[in-house]
View: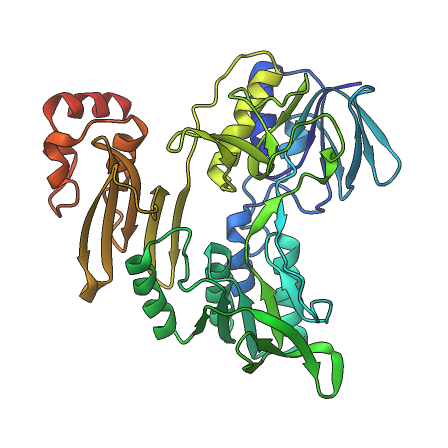
Length: 426
């Protein structure tokens, strides 16, 4: 029997291994992953496609990580079933791995809507290094010139920029009326759409791809797409980049409680004793909305994995919660979006905005009871750390809220007592 078994070798899995080893240096650890390439930085897969980074540069841990931490690895092997009574994980190879403590860090999988023609050669998803490798290889193999990216969110924007850097002409198709609609409000989205269009991308909003059609000489290979309003667009590749959903298949039909993802408490433990979940598959606490939800974000997955690892190893550790936190820089424009960046109409919320559209600068704060619950910064992120501290620590900003978006706002402009507290933290 292995003391600790972890299904998933990405951010949460790596975080858990490191936390366990801080407490228990000898207990057996086994890690299971259906990917053949592990411990790479998933947010960097667009850099692989663009040619900016190779697989080596994408490593977030060195090649000796598993060996150094005395981890038994089952790499390239998929976990297909759990027996919670026997405490076993069944692999597709027929092997059974017995555990004392189990962490489910299976992550997310691409959401791909049912689309006629999605089985054609040249249709890809974009969530793993394997996806990035296949796309890059296909571009080279057929000397691809044009691509359709389905999805105008974070994933769609990242792969669009990567393809553009490879010299492809890209059409981005977004079902919503605005791109980045989960991160930005209408004004912020308009700024980014203008930047993306200026870079040469054809942006189509309010439509979807209805059908993927083949080439005249080879119907099995991608040749064009049919959009909602009847327009056909020629392309060599189609990238499905709409988003991810939790990979919960392993626990379906079991006693493990699932909502949208696997439900966990603030120790990252499920309703089943000795079974934990972390990362994109877990519904963990969001301190802004004060409830659990899925938050598929790399930094949060690392923290959640560490919390699970500590608790599995016997050191009680509470997860303080995360929230929607996206930091990105595409097409030369840095963006920070934290918490309630684009809330619905709510009389209890106060919105502060400052913009300089000539320089593509947009700053927005959402307040509730004089505490910050939402931050949006476009092309001006210098004060993001201070603002996040105020948000995370629910600091009442009533006395200085009118200074928060000022160009002169800094640590030095805060009340002296608050400066001292923040200096201690820093």
